Length: 182
Image 1 (spheres, rainbow, N blue to C red):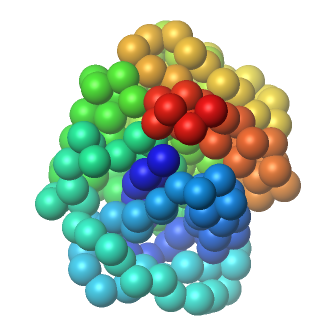
Image 2 (cartoon, rainbow, N blue to C red):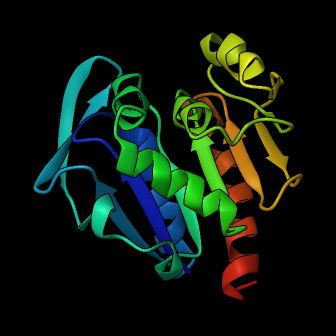
């Protein structure tokens, strides 16, 4: 299982990157950090700077064919920056068009809204995104984890860091189906 993690250079919520990353590794998968800029990304523990992480590949040079799934970690600044990058938005949209599973937590569905892939889907997020998701044609629910298999692919979403155990279990299960590692 080879999984793309997409993050802007600054603003990712550290635990929403590191916990899912560990879940992929724990299932003998290969996580790959994609970003809109080379070098390192800056993680945060809410509003406080945390660790930095090396970028493996630019999203502009990545091919969706090389990945079994896509994880979009949250943090307020991360998805806000990603949705302003046409290449990042296109990468997310192409993942949906290819029918590959996508997992997004907390504020990450902002990027999904920008990619116009929530219409007709049921998902969850940090509660402040509820109106954005509804305005984009999605149905918002207040659940720990929501697996929506409507449309060309599976979308796994969660609300916040407290939901990470359920989020990790759900997305790893769905990604394993695609990679054949069930």
